[in-house]
Length: 453
Image 1 (spheres, one colour):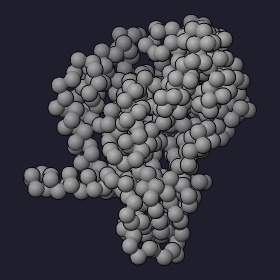
Image 2: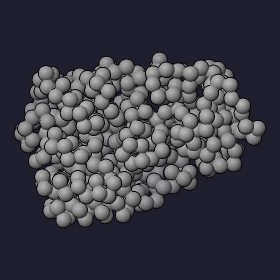
Image 3: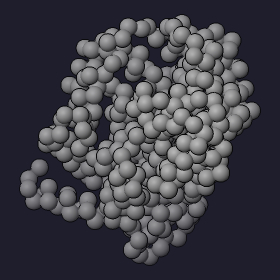
Image 4: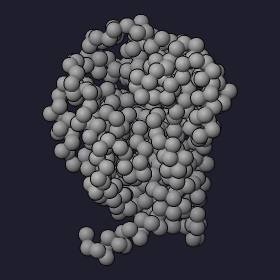
């Protein structure tokens, strides 16, 4: 790219990244995938004002001063995507998410205080390009996994209050909490209106956690550790009996609990365990350029490559369980754990997760629901936030423009023609610039000793 063109692209991006408050935006002659149910609406007009969808219809008058984006009756508009389980906490990661059509993320723990207090709000108000972010605070019962520790009920209550004060939205429970400490967390989190999400807790068990109010099992594989086997029992490579799947489905359905549909996470672990050459291949792949030097270093040093296990039977079981949950209308939420698992990078991996869900037998509508309507419904119900993940009047203006109906081809969402996040529009050129700038920032970073840039 010549210098004048590069400067022009940067100028356009800086304008686009500002809040779109001066003029309404009208998408005209677009085919809409609203995701409120399985249907399409052809040749529609969608009018956006600020960060809200004002109206959707086929014979609408376009405001005189609106910016018009013409779908020419052949392009498709669907909701922005959501990754409900990430650990990314840099502004460059946020740009990569946005360029992939991801307009909402949930950081599920260990985000730096500056990310929660400064970077996340900056993305929300359009000061920097990125998705809206909901941050979780992790509480564990020991420092074994490097998380904030609470060992008494009093400490648990204090930690929940501290998290609330500092702007975290979820409390994430981790493996080693004592039963009385978990109970204190659940009670205090409910009092503070902070939904409890997270792992299966070894000494409590998923069934008891759900009974006490946990609203999201963050990974589908957590059922292995504290539901299908006795909590704390030694784990093997063998899968549970398929006959136990209805028990898990019944548990989460009876309590209205959501489950992380993160097949890409477990699938990646399955593929790299004992295979350093596969991690090396990921590190030399083109998309590795969009992963920070610190995260690339962590992938190379991952403990998974030094383990020996054969998780194929368990992965097949997870595919069957997630499919059964989808068919039973369990609220599945797409998640990736990016970038903590080798070969699972920010943004791109959500598309990989959707592909893995489809390979597991979910319909494209079921798979896409996990990254759109289900996530929006969960956040609206648990946090009281405006609804997103559907294209409907009054909803948050998070949108992806694509060449093909994603219900016919999910992969079309890997190459968005444009993305709207909170009413701010980024065309294909702006998205390409976001990726280019993030790649350059990572390539130029000298911070390769394990600290995040």
